[in-house]
Image (cartoon, rainbow, N blue to C red):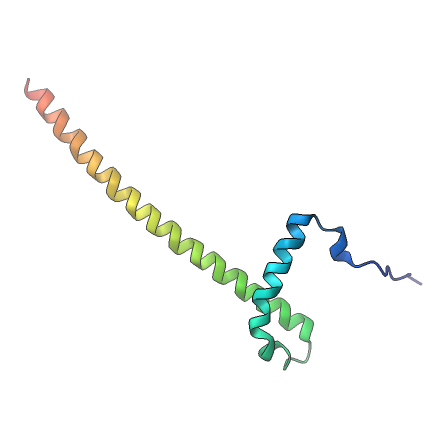
Length: 92
């Protein structure tokens, strides 16, 4: 009924998307022992890819939190200096 397209769907990806997919697939290979034991290997691979993506998001969240903390400390210092400057200006 439907003719299967024999072309590899990945060939239709942009070069950037294909490179990102390749990088993700390399990360998923770490879980090969686990997903090879699954009844549906392809679905298990997808779940492993989600694990890897979640780890990347978690890492980015941690890095962002550190940057926010540093910026908050920096701005608190400027805020204190600003308040002190305003106090001295009011005295004059």
